[in-house]
Length: 145
Image (cartoon, rainbow, N blue to C red; front, side):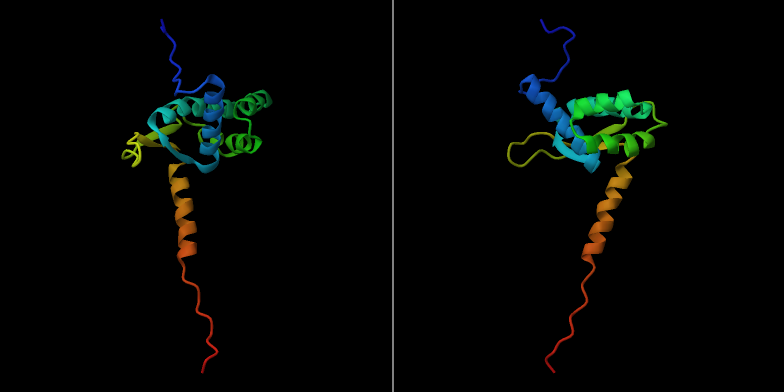
């Protein structure tokens, strides 16, 4: 019987599942939002929130625990220097899952996993980059006269 065993297996072995969740959380830390299936988003949310809790204390031991779980030093650095300090006042619930329309190919339920307080920052950054790229280039002077 599976009483009190709440791990979502996601159709993977345990090593594949932990590696996938670590990669998803690293992508969430670096890119501030990810698009995935609802089941994977719910599984990754618990890992991400535990990493933020480690980042809020900020000790060297917690940094090593996060690095052991995530396997990417640059993601750990971003977590401890940017994300955790911005979540200092929150007691929990650092992420949000926003459901989207089903995926075209297999009709899987798709969702966006993003940080709660960093959502406006992540949405504003690509908009400013797109505005800079959308600016028309000045026409070159023509030599034909």
